[in-house]
Image (cartoon, rainbow, N blue to C red; front, side, top):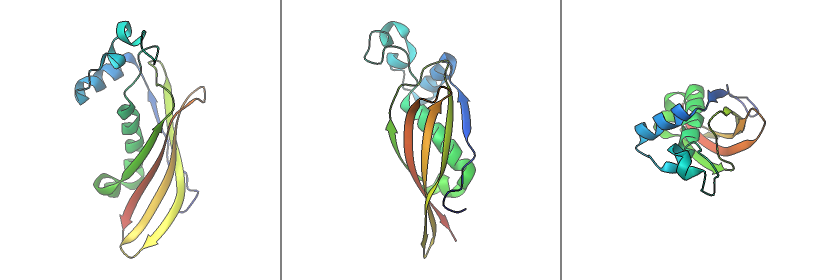
Length: 133
């Protein structure tokens, strides 16, 4: 893998059911994510997916690209830019921005974007993963 290499994207349909399922699995049942009665009156102006749900999709893409190296030592820094609404389709895409050769392996730094089908950027991320020799 070289600088500029494009990672296989991950596409996810976000539904109210998938948000509620994530809330159950994560234990984060904040009404901003699950109740339109509460969320509609909030600063977010409606139900939105958990930020960590989006991060999980980034992690899925990185795991598919780098396997065990990502699972055992990947790092991610995320900036959330907009809420992810039920009914959205997200595309998580990225590429290798840096390739740093070290004595114990190669560190790949990737730039990631999470966009809706209408091209709204909802999150960006920078990831790092050491792939040992």
